[in-house]
Length: 274
Image (cartoon, rainbow, N blue to C red; front, side, top):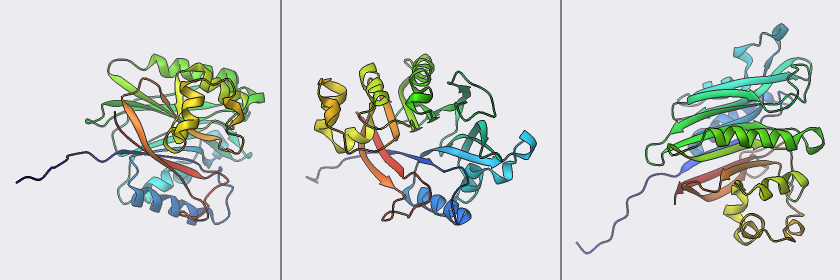
């Protein structure tokens, strides 16, 4: 009838958040706040760090697992994968988790640190899973909590990249490294990510195109002078040859957006096919 129409899918929505390992006041209420945000924002994938459950003589306690509690408060529970790496605050099993609307396939966890002593906070384990969105193909999702630069970030990120790259291929075009990397923009660790020319900061890609190009595409030798006011340590890094593109990125769980629930804010990013 002379009208133009467009057909499109909803974008893929990925949320990341460090939960602060049961250290929050009004903790139970904040778990409900997080679940409310996931429901209202219709996040497809949620990557959580500092997920904790009671130590229970090293055996853990699933009923107290913070990712499990949040998941059970969703209108419809997601698929959930969790693993722990070390004892946190002398009384928790602390680890990382992935929640997803889509079934989690090819699930794995592995230490990326030299240390795998469960009593050392320098023991860092990452979990990964594959999801198939049908309209965007298969994606590999990694939920990550790495050490500070001086505590082993360089080697941990190298191992993470080697692992991630070994899981990619024709069937998997997109890899998302999601979570708390404990590096600030402009730091030595951030330069390592940029100079690897493998993975790119999607928050920057969505919100600072000119700066993103300088850092990740042009490799401007003076780029490190630009992000001096960027104090993020939580990121979604996507592989350069992905068949997706980021379309938006926003901070969550701030004083103005769902309220504080942790010592970190969260980030929600949306992705569409190129």
